[in-house]
Image (cartoon, one colour):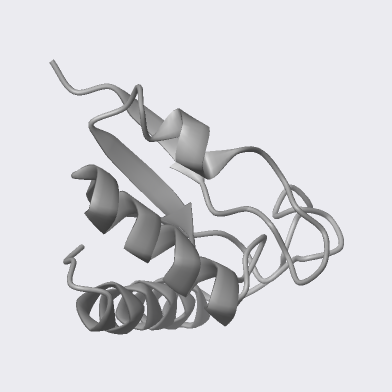
Length: 103
């Protein structure tokens, strides 16, 4: 059985949740990819913690909406949305790879 959690939602100086504690209980984690929550340094730290804990890394993509935490309606085309998703997953893949993990 896979137990999954969304993690990596801190942004800059504003911590959100306790990812290290969560990694003691889950087998996989979807890391926020920066559009609705998270930032590059936080994503990298979360990837490193996941790798160190043996937790599989997944992507928690979101709308380009930091202020609304990805919950507001965003009027965009299908191609813009597809590009945003590919961009977020690509960024997470690069940071995870650098930390010794994979998405």
